[in-house]
Length: 231
Length: 231
DNA sequence: CGACCACTTGAAAACTCTCAAGGCAAGTGG
DNA sequence: CCACTTGCCTTGAGAGTTTTCAAGTGGTCG
Image 1 (tube, each protein chain N blue to C red):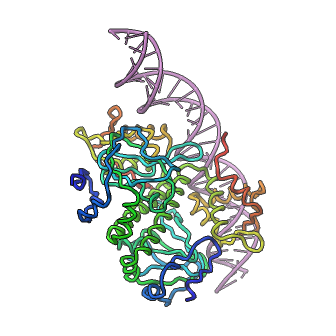
Image 2: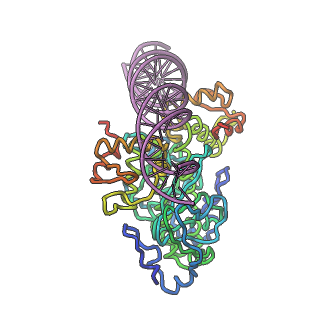
Image 3: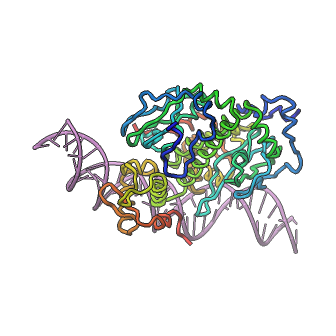
């Protein structure tokens, strides 16, 4: 099954690799209507989930809006990542929106199949728990960043994240199609502050701006910016 | 078993209420050395977990420190809440510290017993997942607050949280023993800003300061402060 | 070509933190 | 019993950071 060969170059392990063929078949993957273009909404906050989404190709932002209307990206999903499992687990409405960042293909797994597998397969259960556990860790780390870091540090943090998630293309540029606004929405700051900070990094030769592309010649220069440098 | 009668007045359901007597016995609760006084460290970030902690009485802060040394409280645990389950699940070191906020009694469950029950009892597994799911939701909500709200809103948010977690004592004061610094550590701001904001609320008759106590006569006045009031 | 969208820059305003200092209450030791 | 220490609360003023608002540029697509 093609699906099992994750084309994800980063360190993610395929979520279903421990299952038997029968178990995978039992998931009744649906392939209908599962390709999205940049900007397409995959699901909307407040609606109820029917399926679990598994990203097969592309990239997805999970985001919500504050009272003031400002957008906050809480997570980036890539090939191999699951979307919407939390709403399914609790049989609750989605707590965020999911939007494709580029051409993205997902598999849909009927909610019931997912829950069934959870209830019958302890290993699978355990894996989902590890996943939740991991997401929780990331959320808490991010909490600390948001609460305590300067804009400069938050932007550096975000660029390192993008570097690690998306890698570099042939010209050493971060291989994401994110706009400045979206980078700010991840970092938790305004578009203008994002632009100014990236521009500072450019002047300091930490990154190089090439149109919309951000060229990273030495990731360690960026990583140096992650921490408060007050002795 | 006394343990099952949660003395928690708030809406928490007891985590173990779905288990059979045998299953509870299988957890091999340990009661040794399980009372802590205010300020006592229950576990430290970076160390490895041996047991799961179940808060029986009192209150616990889960907190970590940023690069600059500033403390951030990520969670408050009360009777019925579990501590350290995430580290156990992943067999990883604790990612935060836990410190008693008042005289606190906890039960310890050997890590192995917990994991065993997880692997053999699908319902229990599911419950832990719901718990994780819930914690994740809170973390993400808090993320949004941190990223987008003003100090005033964050303090209001925190006071409402404390109101809901700890309730009011006989004099209508929030029934927590938290210092101003700790309130700031939850909200994600400095002690001084916390004091100034609470002082503002006092002047505006939203809360009433009585020594270290904060009297809340009408919680809705505070809740009005949760949202940005820009039309 | 015009509209639109993203990017960029400047200047002022708003907000929050930092640093410094003082007050108050409880507990301690002489 | 009093002086002293300690921890927490409070306030002020200035510094620093970040946002806001306004304006302008450049590229792209129909």
